[in-house]
Amino acid sequence: MSLTYAVVRCHGLIQHLLRKEQYLSIVYDKLSLGDIKEYSEYKDEYSLDRKLEIITRRFVERIIFLSKIVEDEIRDFLMAFLDYLELENLKVKLRTLYGKEESAIYYPYSHFIDVNELKEARTDHAFLKLLRREPYRMRMDIMRRILRRGDIALGEAYLDACYYDYVKRVIRENERTLKVLIKFLNYEILRKLAYWLLVLGEEKVYEPITREMLQGLMPYNEEGRHIGLERAIRRLGIDVEEAMKYIETGRITDLMHLMRERELRILQRGARRRSLSLVFIYYYIQLCREEMYNLYRIFIGKENNLQKEVIIGTLITLL
Image (tube, rainbow, N blue to C red; front, side, top):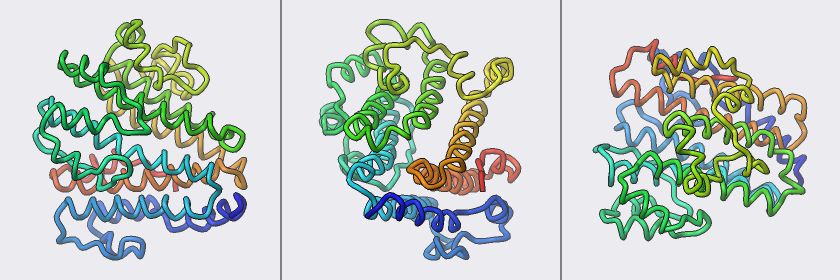
């Protein structure tokens, strides 16, 4: 089907996404998620795992639906976008297998790596065997070296880098169609790079051995450049002094929240200017993903008895 048809469908589908008022009503128990047609199978009495499964499945269904009405080149990108859930699951397993995280929440999603097989992996061999699968192209020598050092943070950064290498490879293979998305993808990559610069430190990220393994964390067509933390922050349109106040007070999560919001606002402006292009589809799928994240924040927050105002402060709402 044509790109125009898919874009027009997205203009209609975006009307079904949750609005800020609905999130607030759910937080304050004035509205059940099951009262919303898109989530009619949801029940308040369900376990947290069951609730999150319903939320994730709705997100996946939305992307899969789109993938069936677009050209092959766009379909490949949509599936790569969706596969981020798979990479997040790998990071969860890394933390539970080698770190100190005892309980874990996996996204109920499988494409190249079966989530149940991942959950059952109990040894280095079983875990590393899963990492070898295409299209992520993770190097076992690198991951073994990371695990021997017990550097879980570097392991997660490497998984992120492999994921963005995969996404950028999809774009390079279909650049004529997908090049309009590069600018906006780069904002997401810059946010990830900023996070790992904060966690690992700039010296470690750019030391020769580490730099090679983390090339995926550099923006598209900027793999050879040295982008420091302040530069990444500026490119996301955030005042460096403001960002440093977050960092100095240990509010890294809040800073990442601000960066994600700015990233989406930039995309929103781009989608409004190019409302009949692929940019609008990208905007729609990012909103779908943020809806999933927002609902996760609400229900995990409720499960942990967080104050309602705290939960609301974690939400990112553009509609």
